[in-house]
Each structure stands twice: as C-alpha cells, then as structure tokens.
Amino acid sequence: MSKSSPLALVAIAIILSTTLAATGCGLLPGGGSSSSSGGKGNPGDGQPATSSQLSPSSTTVNFGNLTVGNSTVQSVTLMDVGTANVTISSVSATGSGFSASGGLNVTLTPNQSITITVNFDPKGVGNAQGTLSISSDASNPSLSLSLSGTGMAAKAGQTSQLSASSSSVSFGNMTVGNSTVQPVTLLDVGTTNITISGVSATGSGFSASGGLNVTLTPNQSVTVDVNFDPTGPGAVTGSLTISSNATNSVVQLGLSGTGVAEVKTHKVALNWQPSTSAVIGYFVYRGPAASSLSKLTGSVDPSPSYTDTSVVGGQTYVYAVTSVDSSNVESAQSSPLSVTIPSQ
Image 1 (tube, rainbow, N blue to C red):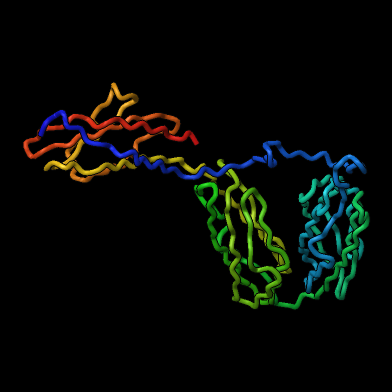
Image 2: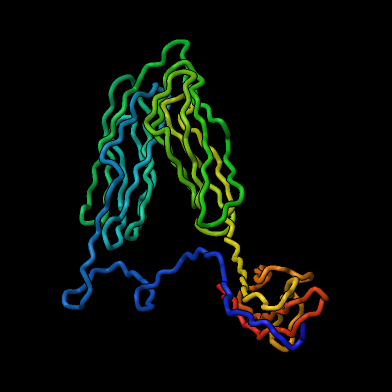
C-alpha cells in the first residue's frame, strides 16, 4: 500500500443530542415576550376587552358523619377563569360547627388558583347546614357554597383511627421532564368506619390521587398515589394531607424530592467508503484543526465507521481517517471533515 493513497471520508456526520427541557419562556409568535397588565381593553384600540370570573371547584361541601368532639377539613379551590385579575375581599363560613380559612385579600391572576380550607367541628348530634361565602371584585362578586355534615354520638368501646403506611415519602433524584409515583396505604385500625373527605398534596411538582370520599371498614385499606413531577432543578419539599372523620381527623405526611437537570449528551457518527485495497482496518484522527490532528483510536478497527462520544457542546472538531494493510503500513490521511457541536 502506498502512503500517498488517502481514503475518502464521506461527510456523513450525525450529531445527536438530548433535548434539554426549557422553562420560563413566554415568547409570542414573532419573537415578542408575553405580558399581562390585568387591565381592560379600550374599544377601538385593537385589544379585546378583559373579563374577570371566579370559579369554585365545587358548589357543595358534604362532610358526612363525624363523631362529636372530632373535627375534619375539606378543601375548596377557587380559580380565576377570566382574563383579568381577581381580588378576594371576604371569606366566611356560617352554620354551627363550620369555619373557613385561607384566600382572604389574595389577588389571583388569570388561571391562578387558591385553596380555601373549610373545617367541620360538630357541636352536637344531628344534621348541620351552613354556607361558605366568598366576595371578590370578579364579575360574579358573591359566591355561596352549601355546607353540610352530621354530628354523631360516640358509642362506648368504639374507636376510629386512620393509619398511614409511612410518615414521609422521599422520591430522591428525578430528572426534570420525567415523573414517578409512590403509593401510600391508609388503613382503618379502629373499630368503626372511617370516611376520607380530603386528599391533597402541596409543594412544587407533587400531586396525589385516590382515596377521596372512600369509606373504610375496620381493617380495610385504600391506596393513595403520590406523584412527583419536578418543574425545575433543585430540592423541593411538600406534604400529603388526608382528612377524615377518624379520631385523628388530619393525617399529614412529609414529601421530598430533588429535580435534576437533564444532562446534555452529544456524539458524532462517522462513516466512510471502505478502501478498495486489501486492508485490515482503519485509524480515526481528530483535532481542533486539520493541521493538528491526533490519533483518536488506539487500535486498528476493521469497521468503516466510528462514533465519537467524547465531544463537548459548542466546540468544533476536525476528523480524518487512514487505512492499514496487513503489513501494518498506514495510508495517508483522508480529506478532513469539520463538525461543529451545538451548544444547546
């Protein structure tokens, strides 16, 4: 083989990279960024008029049966479903044994929500009725939600106790853009039925499903699935809250997890036409410029292809190959091939 017979390195350089999740971008078509002032559009100025509308997750809250001397809570979510900001000026509950907290003097932007916690602490045996009232500057300024529950007398020798399979749930590390689920088992360890009236998760990226409005008989259990879907890198904490008519009316579990940014990886796949001469393999060279190439492969590779996984984003690499015959005579280098790796 003559050292003056170079190979033709075919310019098939495939650059592969993972997709990095991007958050916080609010670009409009044409490159402009989105913004909201919360005001109302003026007729003739080309802007649509804004509206304000406050929507509750439910118009009724039923606490079911609860032994006198115990208390339980349920959550009501209020969402701004209009196109203007809404300020909540008043939150109150009427009716024996009912009270409410949260949401007062809160201003919601469009599609933002707030949770109101409603408590039921029966003052005596029998049915109780009440109203949750919310006032705001929305186009529907007054909301009234019906509240109901029944106070029950405790029976001698009877107990109600809700037990969770764990006092905390740790999700460890999770790549942003992925999600995982862990189950929590709730067991009635008492001697009376227990009705679960509320299941909610707080904390960025945490959510829960299952168990809501389930009635457990003694020794019966139900599973609540807790999901972690990190919205960005970093450690986050939260809580899972289960409300019921058990003696321990509120069971709370700590939640924790860490969002990990997806690692960007790149690789360059090279292919070339096999030598027309009898050869035993090839060497691959790489460098920052055609004048400063060094051998990338330590041994002769019989395959007319090579994948370089040691590249870095934002860098430019120049490649060339040589062939080797059975006498270990190496040909001249092929024409160089330049590849620029994306920075993103």
